[in-house]
Length: 206
Ligand code: CTP
Ligand code: MG
Image: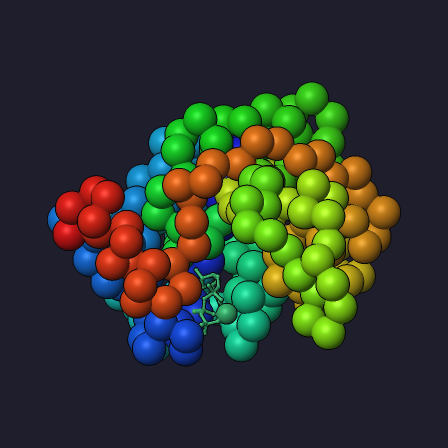
């Protein structure tokens, strides 16, 4: 089965104060970690960048395309560049540099065994409270990560029929697809604020 990856890196990083995916981490850019993992785990890699950067050379990517105004729009731009015969498509946030190769392999395997979508999930460790309500049972919730893997037909249909969401598995679920949760990784955090990057630099060198 041919496997392609889309790495979305077209965001402006408003909460960070700039495009965090181009900051340095461990001797290379944040997004390079994801590009390397994607290249090792798939047959082709589509990198989605801000339109201003679409002409910049990115040797680790097979194709570079300009993203959209929303994350879902950027995924769609990437999907348009994935060959029609790709059977499995992964979508990964450039802002998550620490996803292990094992995690990439786990989500791909879950799609090979029949799921429309496979999503890494981690348990909630803090006490969870609803604003204006009370404490809720955290065992009923997980937080989800990327890379998420999809049967390509399911991802294409979801983006055609249910176009906006903060991740892609929720779109596949909205059109009736089977979404499987696999074990995520607590270290696979998304960089959202400067504090997230500082903590990560502390763990793996600047
Ligand atoms: N992303 C994208 N295109 C967009 C918005 C987001 O490709 N229009 C990408 C980001 O570059 C990031 C991933 O989607 O790798 C997850 O998004 P998020 O962490 O929200 O990043 P930003 O949208 O850049 O940050 P913010 O929401 O703080 O502006
Ligand atoms: Mg965002």
